[in-house]
Structures are given as C-alpha cells and as structure tokens.
Amino acid sequence: MTLPAGPLSAASAASSALLIPSADELRHALQPLPRQGEIREPGVDPAGLRPAAVLFPIVRHDAGPSVLLTQRTPHLSAHAGQISFPGGQVEPEDPTLLDTALRETEEEIGLPRSAVEVLGYLPEYFTVTGFRITPVVGLLTPPFDLVPDAREVDEVFEVPLAFLLDPANRQRHAREWQGRQRYYYALPYGERYIWGATAGMIVALADALAALRGEGR
Figure 1 (tube, rainbow, N blue to C red):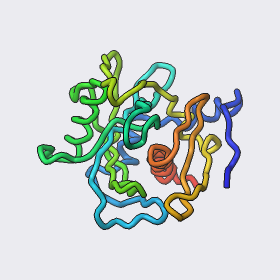
Figure 2 (cartoon, rainbow, N blue to C red):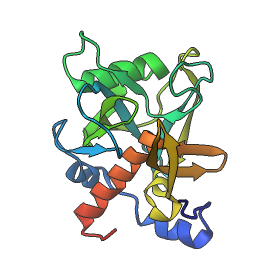
Figure 3 (tube, helix red, strand yellow):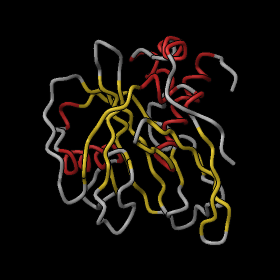
Figure 4 (cartoon, rainbow, N blue to C red):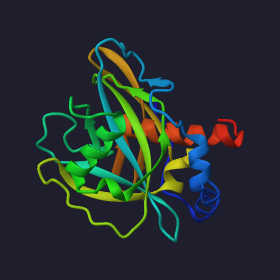
C-alpha cells in the first residue's frame, strides 16, 4: 500500500512553518530518560535484540531548523547506501546510551560531543533487523565542522524539520521480508529516500509533538 506524497507546494510550505517546534516544546514532548516506552516494527520479537543508540540532530538555522542525516556508503555489509541517523551498537566501554550515540556520531561524522545540546529521548525503536534503538534528540548550533568517516559515510546532508514533521509528506509502504509483510514509513525528499527505522523515528517525533499539542492523527 502506498499513500501519495510529494514536494511541498507554496501553500503547504506556509502551513508547514506552523509545525516548527521551539526547543522548549521539543523538551516537553520528549522523554527525560531513555527506554521509557517502545515502538516495534510489525513482527519484531524483542528477545535477543542488540542495544543501539542514534543521535537525532536538529540544526538551528535562521530560516528554520533542519535535521542532519547521513547517506551510508554503498559497500557496507548492512544497510548499504541507506539514509540514517549517526549512531550504532552499544559497546562495553559506553557508560550510557547517550555515550553510545555521541561516541558513534563523533566517529562517523566528526561532530564533537560538546556541540550537542541534548533535549531528550524518543521511545526505543525495535527493528526487524535485530536492534533496539534509543534515539537521542540533540540540538546543534552552527558553526560546527564535520569530518565524515569515508569508510561508513558517503554524504552528510540536511532536510528541513518542517518538511519531515508534515504528515502530508509521509508515505506508508509494505513489502515482503523474510516471508512476512513488513510495513514501514517513507519520506521522499527530492532525490533522497528516507525510509525504514529512520523514517519511523521521525514519525515518532512528529507524533510526540502532536500529542503535546493535543492534535489528532
């Protein structure tokens, strides 16, 4: 099943500007601690999932905030060429899930931990690929320098937050995976195709803000 979506028209761009949250609104919509609640992709067995954490980086701009995303290199053994948040698996030396997200972000794109203002957490996201991911939402204030790891990251780019939060730009798809129907979100943006867990976490932020504002879905 596919729901129609496309680029923002001038009218929808104006209405999307109303979706832009303030930093305080984001803090109130997010959880102050990790692992409070969960979102499961259909068919996920939570037993044996590997813990991971990602940074959901929101970049301040005068024209409106954007979300920083990475395009993975095409030669990787897992999720090659896909669009994702910086992050990865929990390592034994990580004291907390926040440390995992910040360490992996620094390793992948060279963003120092000191550049991240942590706003809060989204519910854990359980994936059919075997991970339980903690999304850490952080605010970045330019200027900052990025040094992507060419082995893992093909490109770093930004997408307007208003575009990602607008339900009109959201698609729902289904495909067969390991003998079962898998349903997932997608957020096409120009030539970029944001889908799967990354799109699901973006929708989770949109839903948290909608709940805070008392909006129906």
